[in-house]
Image 1: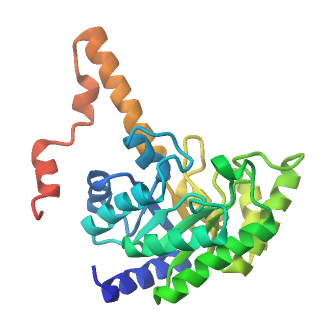
Image 2: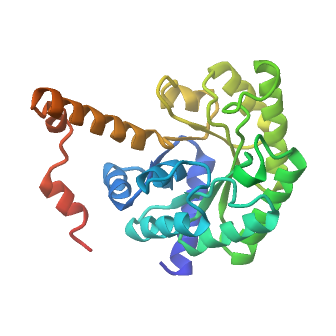
Length: 281
């Protein structure tokens, strides 16, 4: 993919996010990305957790920048859709580390990134404070600007996932303050996984001053309800890969316990369909 094509994909991705109603599927390898593309999704993301699991590692930056971005590059080269890269918390606490990760994501063919405000591993635990995350987001924006690519930066806020604050109202206020700060620092969108309450989504969306992204998960309201409440984008995240793992578990149990394969037959993709996905390679 040349720079002009990547720029066009970036512009298309930004337009999709701005117009709203964007349902984003998250892939973990070429096969999953092509299946989602074939089904008609307008854009794709990667899931760092799903990619890590597929390589026998836990989530939360255990895989590392180089290995993760190699998978992003393989997926970006295999599809014709805009692809946004999950770069976790930037593979280092310092703004310079975030800048390197953004540069690597762009080099891999991504047209957007997700950047978390959660500390990982040697960088401690909990959330970066507002000032620290603002500096990290500013570094991400500067790196994108230097590349000349209109990169879409989705600033992930883990306040709901980590149950920050003394109560739910304080958590919402904290998320609102963080989201505004992240947009001011250079983010294009704020991502709040774990937020499922429609009334709180409406409050956050109306007060944020910028686009809101949410994550689909079992038990969450449907996409139509989330969009109506104010979300601009809803991503599937790691959940499709976890659902595939659940299917594998059920097929294995059925085969061992009953010697049958009804579960496998119900979800069988087909040899011909699989071959067609890769017939152009």
